Image (cartoon, rainbow, N blue to C red; front, side):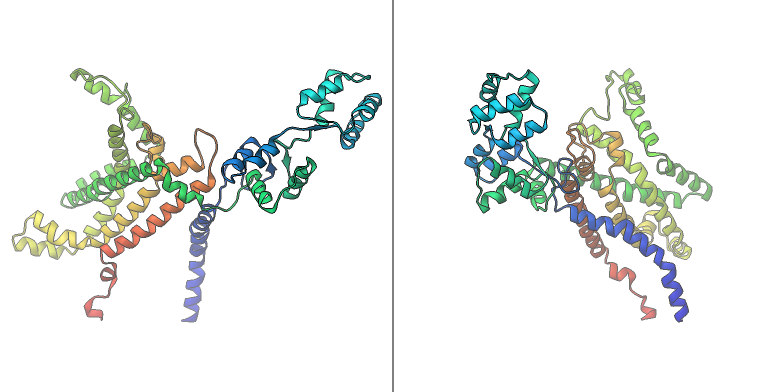
Length: 435
């Protein structure tokens, strides 16, 4: 007994490792990233501190410190010993340095033009490239300056004569930090922007229509219809409906596009009836949704058909023979024998396909890419566009992870709802004869 248990643990270990690495770890990392502001701008590692115009604007708006932002944004050029020493190391003529030290040491200028006017009028006149180099060494503004650490940032601010309080230091550090940080603003932002409700509405339409019409509804019709057919005929039709699933997704969608293009089969077929050619796939939101449901439904129906067909084959033939003797017709057999026996397969297909549809977007990406005008952009596709591929170029990893985490929570809630709806405990309970 002990050896069998040990062997069982040994055999199940690879499966446990795969589940942890490919499912649990990604879910945990998604939950962690959902509470960060990671993006292309921040990167995924630690950032620096930069007094950019955006940081100054954030000091004004977010931290309500307009006076501090004004002081930090002011340019100032000071002729001092550190600047002269740096120019000496850069190879500037000694006569120029002597003129600056003797006649202008300690002078302060509010603009670069004023500083360069004085430098240009020295006895030892510098060339134009030297003029720019000299004035830059006396620049004591920290606008657009980049600092590797918080200490270097505060030291730079101190060097221009600005002393910060503890509250101002915290505000400046928060506004100038270019790396990522922890935040819960992703979820508040999600609840406030209009695109969230649009993606949610599109997802409900997509899942509800595809699931009820094809993944469960049409799949059951196919399974029951072929169940009453001769074996060879039934096998032919089942194989026919497997073609969309086994076709490469790119080729499969291209066939649909060829059907819907303005030069495709549908336009050519309708032209003799006076209907002008158009791109039916992206002509309107309604047409786009029809094709999205059809494209995904034809693939999803095949899986449900196989599961329902297998479940139908497991129903004892004696039940059908007895119903024939009692005079039951096909409709009565389906209602009183077939459907009650399919409760467990229906639960599995409904739950699995719901979760699959919630997270699938590949066929929508290939066919409409969420168009026209975002009318078919479901939640999963919006997550992909936000975190991995968008026109703006700023990929928002943290916000995309927050959107993905919402999908995980919705999937768990729907799974529990389905288990309760189909009375899971009764389905898995022992038969009365075994109790």
